Structure formats: C-alpha cells, structure tokens
Length: 184
Image 1 (tube, one colour):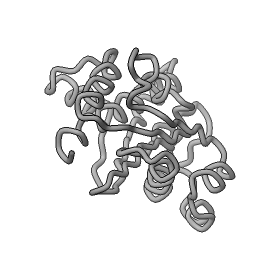
Image 2 (cartoon, rainbow, N blue to C red):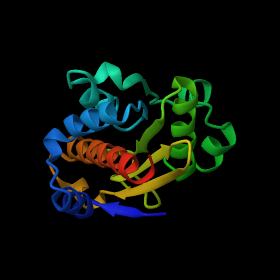
Image 3 (tube, rainbow, N blue to C red):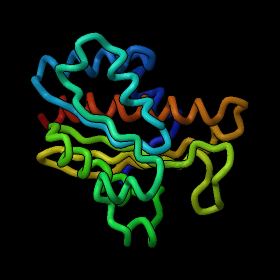
Image 4 (cartoon, rainbow, N blue to C red):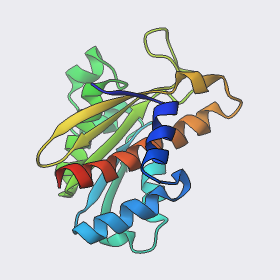
C-alpha cells in the first residue's frame, strides 16, 4: 500500500501544476470531459470532498451521491462495510476505506467510488492509530485499493483538525484525477 505524507501531497500537486484550492474545478471539468461520474463516502472529512465537488458549477453532471458515514452503524447499514471489519480492524483501516468506496460505487452506480476514514483530531488518536492517520479508498470497474495518508506531523498545528481534513480532501481529489488519467 502506498503511504503519502503532507509533503508528498504538496509535491504531487506542484509536479502536476495543480493548485490545491482549485482541484475541484479540475476534477469536475475532467469528469465532464470523460463522461464519468464519481460518488463519495466520507467519515473524517465530514462531507468536505462532496462539498468541494458540488461547489463547482456543472457538478450535477458528474456527481449524484455523497454519503457522510461518520458512525460505524451507517458505514455498515448504508455502505455495506462488514461488521467483522469494523469490529476487528476498526473504522480507521484500509479495509474499511475499500469497503466504503465499494459500497458507495455500488449504491450510486458511479464510475468511481472514493472514501475517506481517519482521525482528524485533536482527540481520538492512539499510539497505533495517531491523529493524522487517514485511509482513502478507491473503487473503479478495474481496480480497488486504499491509500494510507500519514498527516501525523500536522497534528501539532493549532488548526490541525481543519488542516488534516483539507489535506485529505486534496488527496482524494488528486486521486480522482489520477484515476481518470491512468485507468479510464
């Protein structure tokens, strides 16, 4: 599994001449151009990825469904994350992220399902799962996987929670663009 840090996300955006503040415009325009749809299943970002996508005029052509699944019960009941995964591995795990992405893709019929689950803080972290640990799940017709995001260094910032959520949404939006260009 690939692990990306805050520095990695910033470098990937720079390398690809992308501005973090306008990523959503790139995503919507590219999805429209390729005639694709995306759906989101979010936990730690609380709907931020969906909000950023729907902030863009024309997003209704490419976005039908966003599920904010903050509780394990909703992850299970709505998205189909197995109770065993939640009980054994927890909500913050690659497996949960993958099952969330699979569930929202199936529920919506979208071409791409993307999910976020993690610990934005400032509380809730443990030595095994510190504040800043996030998983981003991806499901397309060809591939299903998770990315591990390690934003633990950002956990000491005064605005850590909002910053971790923003970084996670940046990573999710960049991942959508990457999927479109690499796989579809």
